[in-house]
Amino acid sequence: MSIVAFLIVIGISVILHEMGHFLAARKCDVQVHEFAFGMGPALYKRRKGETIWSFRIFPIGGFVRLAGMGETQEGEIDDPQRSFYQKSAGARALLLASGPFVNVLLAFLLSSLFLCAHGVLDLSHPTVGEVMAGFPAEEIGLRPGDTVVQVGEVEVKTWVEMSQALREKAKEDERIDLVIQRGGERIQFSDVELLLDPQYGILLLGIRPAMIKYPPHRALTGAFTYLWQMSKQMATAIMGWISGRQKVEVAGPLGIAAMAGEAVKEGWWSFISFLAVINLNLGILNLVPFPALDGGRLLFVLVEMTSRKKVSERLENYIHMVGFAVLIGLILLVTWQDVMRLLK
Image (cartoon, rainbow, N blue to C red; front, side, top):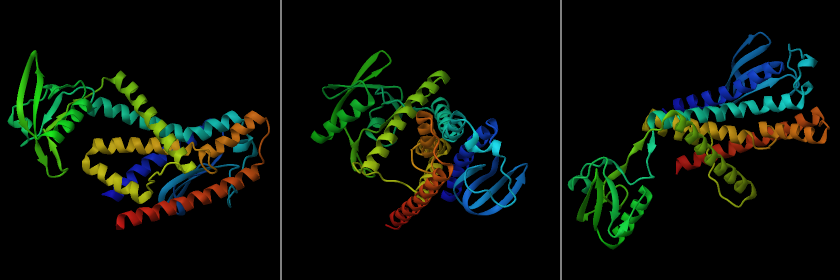
C-alpha cells in the first residue's frame, strides 16, 4: 500500500509540476523536446509532434527538456527562435515559476476542499464533539455539544486552555470538578475521577473536540492562512538547516512512501491532506535558489533583469549540471538515512 500511495502522490505532484512548465513553454512558444516522468533510463517513449513523452525507471522526479537547456539529442533539431534563452527575461521567469505555482495552487485547492467538505477540529472553543466510550465523560453523562466552562477553579475559553487546566489538575489529584454549559443551563460535576489511558499513559476525561466545516468563502481564506503559515515555517526550517542552527529531519523517497501509506490507512481525507502538504513542500523547495532547481534558474534571470547583462548559457548550464549532481547525492544520502531509520 505504501508503494502504491507513494506512486500516486509523486505521480500527481510531479506530473502537474512539469505540466505547469510545459503549458507555460507552449504559451511562450518555447520548443519542448521531452516531457519525462521519473529519472534514469526510459521504460517507455512516444513522440507526439515535436515532443517525446517518456516514463523512466526511477519514479522520484521528472523534467521538461526545453530547447537550449542542455545538449540536443540525436534526431532533434533546435529552432533558434524558440530556444529558452532567446525569450525575454520575463517570459523565462514565468516559465520557471509555473511549475512551483501549480503545486502551490493544488495545495491551496486541496486544503480548501478539506476545510469545506471534511472540516477541522475546533480548538477555539471547549465544546465537546465526541464522548469516548468507557471514559469518565460517558459515565457522568456528558454529551456532544456541551461546552466546558470551568475546570476546578479555572475558567476556560478554548480547548487548549481546557486541556492545560485538566493536565494541571491531574498532577494534583485524579479527581476534578467540572462546570459545563448545556443550552442555557450550567451544570456542575464534582469529584469526577479521571481514567488512565494505557496507550498514552496519561489521565483522561474522555472527550474530543468538535469538527467544524467552513463555508466555501471561509475555506478559501482559511486555506490561504494555513498555507502561508506552513510556508513561513518551511522557510525558517530551510534557513536554519542551511546555516546549521537548526536540526531538521528530512524524509527521502522511502520516508515519504511510509508516510503516504500511513495517510491512506487513516482514510482518504488524511491522504488528501498529506497530498496538499507534499505539493506545498514541492512548490516551496523548488523555489530555493539552488542550481538545477527552478529557484536557481530564476536567480540567474533576476540577476540578468537587475544587471541588464545575460550570463553565458554554457556557464549557466554547467552550474546547473553541478547542482543536479549535488541534488542526486543528497537524495541518495537521505534515502540511506531512511533505510537506517526503517531498520532500527
